[in-house]
Image (cartoon, rainbow, N blue to C red; front, side, top):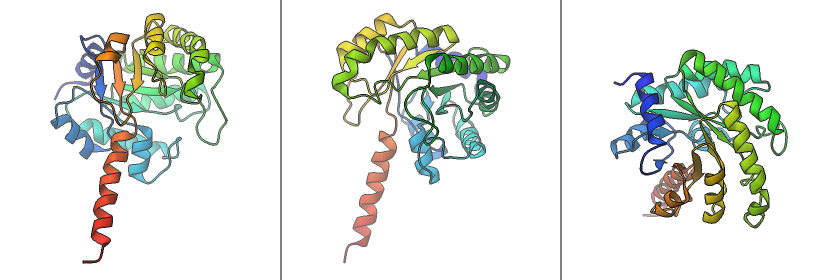
Amino acid sequence: MPTQTEKLTHFASLHAGAEPLVLVNIWDAGSARTVAAAGARALATGSASVGGALGFADGEAVPLDLVLGHAARIAAAVDLPVSIDFEAGYAASPDGVAENIRRVVGTGAVGINLEDGYPAGDGEGLRPVEDAAARIEAARAAADDLLRGFWINARTDICLNAKPEDHAAHLPDVIARGKTYAEAGASSLFVPGLRDLALIAQVCAACPLPVNVMAGPEAGGFGALAEAGVRRISYGPFPWRAAMATLTSYAKQAGEPG
């Protein structure tokens, strides 16, 4: 099996290849092995999917020790690099984020998603940009002490929280946060909810980081996203939802009268 450093080097290179890195988000060791066997180049968890698989809601409802143990099992189950959706860092302060990131590195993962919003029940909307950047800086310093170059996919929920028709008006804020997060040490910028190709292209052109967007359940080819400059595409909770829909279908058929 490759070392964690070798996995990280490979993962970083996938963000600079000829085609975007496509991540079919997984939720446990079994789904990780299934996606790996299908030819994936890397793996990433989705917090809603992991939470659902473990019987919890999204929004840091899963106990941190369980999150970390689950991540370690996934990383140990495959030879591929694994990135963990770490939501808002499971801590109120930058120092707390730093401590938790050290524990994430210890799971064998090579990267995380780190959101700029508040976990469910702790606040509404986004953190002030300075606060979000301080958390990224703390995560970068802590991670680099153990695994230099650990991948931090800084997620901004600006577009996810706004109506699609308002996305153009929010684009300057998306780009400004992307630049600030780059200065803070982020490795890439994740903009879930943004689907308009012209707006995506503007973000990719203006942001110094590789840009990650989320594919919808109907997504097929990604040529247009690649042309727009997207370097990473993820499916979020959609694979888990599809798997649960299939399971529900089996259960309903089993319950039908013979």
